[in-house]
Amino acid sequence: MKIPVTAEFWISGLNALPEEIKEELTLQGLRLGSTLILLIFSWIIGQRIIAYWEIKKRIRESDLESENTFQRIHGEFKALWRIYKVYIKQAPDRSRITTENSPQWSLIERSSILEGEWEALLLKLASNRKLSATDLTDLGLLRQLIQQLREGIKRNYTLDEPFRENDYQLFHTLSARVIEILRRPFQNQSATATELQMHKILEVKPADLEPYRNSAGSE
Image 1 (cartoon, one colour):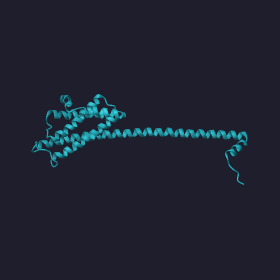
Image 2 (cartoon, rainbow, N blue to C red):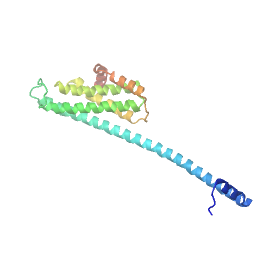
Image 3 (cartoon, one colour):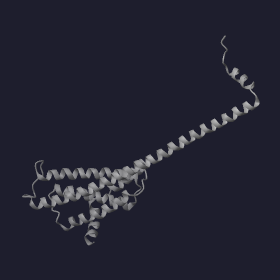
Image 4 (cartoon, one colour):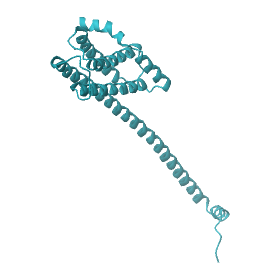
């Protein structure tokens, strides 16, 4: 004969137990419940701690990548400047229009790639740093310097003129400021704030370089 196992069956069985056993079962049940709650709570807290440090790690890796990218931009700018400076002195015809077969073309390609990398890094900085008015101006000036190098190569400008040499000095000054910005704490910006900061950077025009060129030349 099969005995039906129902909730009532178990309740009646428990009620039939001596009081000492019921108290012991209740105590063990409370202990088990407390242990389970503690384990769940510890797991939740542990996951949050792990997530927090994982985010910190990714931010640090991103910042290091940005700094490495800028160091590469810095080195490429100086290399292009020096190569073109030698080339323009030896070029047989400075008025010649640049074509894909000319030695200038590879320099224009490299300077255009350099400019694109800097634009991408600017967007990254505008999205994860709170930038002051001075920061925005410095970043915009450096953007203009990098563009001026490409334009100089494109138009066969010499780099021996005083204001060109001042550009080279100003590039070093602004580069040091960019490194300082890159090493600041991460501050995620909203889409609106990012757009506003980028707009301020893009507002800097070639004419804004003039007073800074004079300053660089006097140092």
